Structure formats: C-alpha cells, structure tokens
Length: 341
Ligand code: ATP
Ligand code: LTN
Image 1: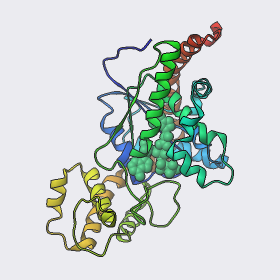
Image 2: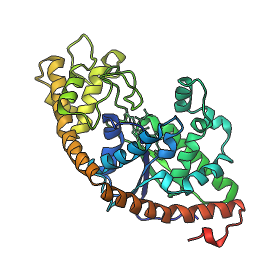
Image 3: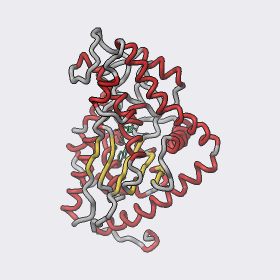
Image 4: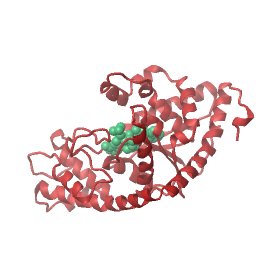
C-alpha cells in the first residue's frame, strides 16, 4: 500500500567516484543540509552505481569513506538523516532486478546520460544501461516523494516515476510516485575551464572544477583562471558567450543565498572581471574552508565513521526490506518467513 505520511520523504544519492566539487555541493548537498529538519531524509552513497564504470577496488573503498566523511563535514547530521552506503542494504540490488523486468529497453536507451557516457567507452557495459533502474529501486524502496538533485538527474527521476506507475498499474498500488526537486540557483554549475560543460567529477582537465578539499590558494587560482569573455558587463545572461560570467554569478548567488538583484547590487561597483572572480573566490572559500577542516578531523576517527554508517544501514534496512517483501508478494513470489522482519 502507498502510505500517507505527515512529513514528506526525501531520498537522494551520490556516487563515491572522486572528489566532490562545487556543483555537487551547490546543486545537491547544500540543499540536503538546509532541508534536513523539514523532511524525513535518506542520503545514500551509491557505490553500486559507481561500478557501472570500472573502479579500482582500493579507490572505491577509499572513495566511499571519504565521501561519507565529506557529507558529514558539509553538515549532514546522522541524528536527523539516514546516511548509508547502498551496498550495505541488499534490497537495492534485488529491487533493481525485479524492476528491470518491467522496464522497456527503449526507455533506457533514450537516457541522455547513458548516450553521453556510452559514447566515451569502447565497450559499453550492461550496468551503464540499467543504471537508472537501480536508481529507481533506490527511490521507490523508501516511498520517497521528493528527490533533490541537480538538473542532470531530472530525466532519471522521471523514469523512476514511470517505472513506479507501470508497477502500480500491473500489480496494484505499491509505490509512491517520486518527483525531482531541482534548486532554483546553481542547478547546473558549469566547468570553470569551459562554461558550456557541466562541472563533473569525471572531467580531469586542470582548472575545470573547484573541489571541496582544495586549499584556499587552489580555489583562488581556479577562479582566477576561469574562462569569461572579452567584454566588461557583469550580468546574468543566457547568451552562450556570457556563459562564463553567468556561471560565476550563479555560483556567488547559490553560495551566499542572495537574490539576483542583490547579487547585481553587490557587483555594481566592481572593477571588471578580475574583481568579480576574486570576490566569488572569497565567498566560496568562506563556505568551503570549514568543511575541509571538519573533513580532516572526521577522517582521523575511523571507528566513529564506521559506527555512523552501520547505524545508517540498519535504519535503511528497516525501511527497504519490508518494502521489498511487499513488492515480491505483489509479483507472486513465495516469501519465506526468514526473509521477513
Ligand atoms: P560524474 O561526473 O562522475 O557523473 P557528478 O559530478 O555528476 O559525477 P554525481 O555523484 O553523479 O556527480 O552527482 C551527485 C549530485 O550532484 C547529483 O544530485 C547531481 O545532480 C549533482 N550535480 C553533479 N554535477 C552538478 C553540477 N555541475 N551542477 C549542479 N549539480 C550537480
Ligand atoms: N544517478 C545519481 C545518483 C543516484 C541517485 C539515486 C540520486 C543514485 N541513486 C537516487 C537520487 C536518487 C547521480 O549520478 N547523481
């Protein structure tokens, strides 16, 4: 049955595939932190998604712990949010298989992320194609209403909704229909080296991203080198040639939480782009430096990190396992007692 809940449920995920950047922070994590009291939230480190592209085992292990520490450092509070690692909860992999059996191939072949990532590989792995089905399972197992993500994930959340609808139609009302919740500011932070491409963990070019673990000087340097244009006008704009300046203003707006007009007022007396870049760098440093410091402390305390992740996995299983039993029963599987809680 689809439950009625007082507090809407939020679910979101992030891959342990490299250092977090400003796009991940402004587009997703900062908003998860800001809303952790309003909603009942589940935040998942999606290691099963990460292996859709080969991960060196030691790097995956390290990346998973680093990501957990960074999320905590950024303000995710394990007393208020269920923070857990996807592979610690077996129901995710199992839900993915069941849902793949009701998902038309054509829906997956149409996904723009699949098309873009597949184009970069010589041999395309099956998991890269079925990635959004695993993601649908993540969300649907927790009856999540809202999925706060960056703009790039909108299509995947809509697919999860379509899969839920199809399941409900075939087997009766089982899943809540989720919707993407995309921030108004910084929904798509662009690369500093190329403001026509989204800032991404997997892009390795120097000066592309600002990482949450970068030093103050590295951040200053990255902004100093940021690509702009040959003009002087500091304004929000959709024009492709103004994409660099627009990106800097968006970063400033999302970091400070100020309105477009306030941002323009702040820069009314600015002396050209050099001044703009420097001031954007300073607000970003003010936001990131404390995260970097807390991250270092958390990485020192392995036992505490283990405790938090164990507690998160236990709380997640308590939700996901009964839901999976319900799904299997609806589909006609015999569910033995030992698989029930
Ligand atoms: P990759 O480039 O390796 O695919 P990624 O940088 O996109 O990784 P994810 O783990 O896929 O990172 O995304 C985590 C969250 O960050 C998602 O909600 C995603 O929408 C958001 N996000 C990622 N990049 C940006 C960006 N440039 N601007 C805004 N939000 C972003
Ligand atoms: N595909 C997402 C990560 C992700 C996710 C999820 C996001 C996996 N499962 C469930 C929201 C809800 C990404 O790459 N950002």
